[in-house]
Figure 1 (spheres, rainbow, N blue to C red):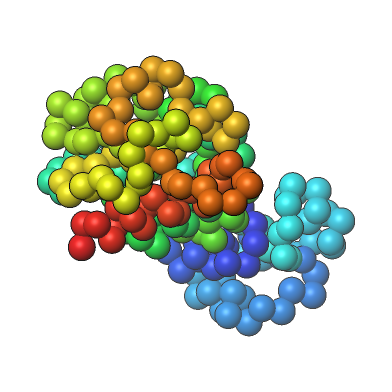
Figure 2 (figure 1 turned 60 degrees about the vertical axis):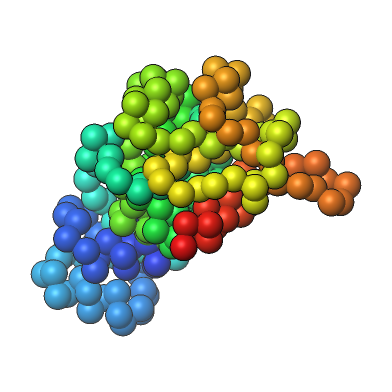
Length: 231
C-alpha cells in the first residue's frame, strides 16, 4: 500500500508499522521526518518531482511510503459493554470516509463498520484525509450489513439510523449503553433494508434552504451528540 503526505507519513514513522520503501522528493528538508527515518535505519530513495507525481495520485508533499495493506479487525474483537460503533452504509467518497475516520478517532468511537462490497476501502486518499488516524482506528469489514445489525442487536446494541425522513430529532434519543450509529450513502442515504432494521431513525433539523448536509459533516454532528449524551 502506498501512502503519502507529511502528516500521514509522520504518524506511520512514529508507529510500529513496517515501512518497506521510502521515497523523498529531491530537496526534501523536513528535519523531523528525516530524523524519524534515520532513527529507524531506513533507506531513502530520492526521486525528482515528476517521478514522485507518477507514484502518487494526490498531493504527496515530497514524501511517499510503501507499507503493508491496512489490517481490518474482526467484529467480535470490539464487542463489549457500553460500546459506541459507527456503521457506514456504502459510502462512495474516500474524502468523506477519511474525514469520518478522523472524527471517530478524535471522539473516541470504539470502531467503524463498513461493508465489503461497494464501499470505499482504506486507500491512500482515506489515509491522507484522515491525517493518518486510520492507523489508530479499529475498522471492521463485514459481508452483510443487515446480518451485522441483527448480530449487534443480539449483543445488546441499539441501532440508530440517520435519515432526512427520520421521525426523531437527533437530540431526543437516549444514547446510553451499546450504540451503533449508521451513516448512509452520500446520495441515496441508507438502504431500505438497513433503514427497516434500525431501532431509531433520527434527523438533523435544517433551518436554511439547504435540505441536507455533507455525509462527513452530518456524521460529525451525530457522533459528538452521542458522546455528549453519554458523558
